[in-house]
Picture (cartoon, rainbow, N blue to C red):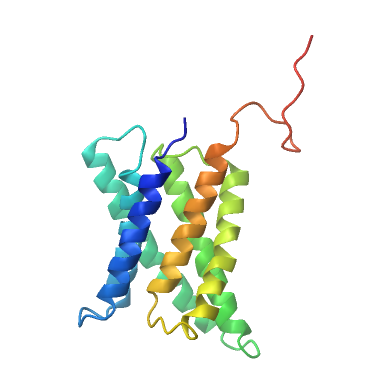
Length: 189
């Protein structure tokens, strides 16, 4: 059995995605830090609410709060990256900063997930999931204008699905012993 009830998890992500789409149309706070904290809290909540072995409520709330804080840190990494890489030609600077922020956010979130015992992230799964978030974020950036999705919520939604899709993939794999190449060794006679 996996670590999450994935139907529930992806249903929650879908509901949260619609909620974000509606909220962008309302005259709410335009503070990016608050917005990114909400993104982190929503995904973390979707994970916690879909656990097959629920954790104590205090621990779950702490996980959601720290995840929200990590999203704010990721936003700051992106802002710093824009200044650091701003001199690169064309759009290379902003895309490099966005990729770095995406990777930083995914890595730190994966470490948080492992530390809290929510999912046993290995170095391979953490790396693969984190790297998969970069093209998802770039796809969101490329499609936001043509699809008329204003704001950063579309970036968060595609990132959520890439991250959760990676969790699902690695949760479905057999957890047997593996060699360095990733193959399961043959039993000894």
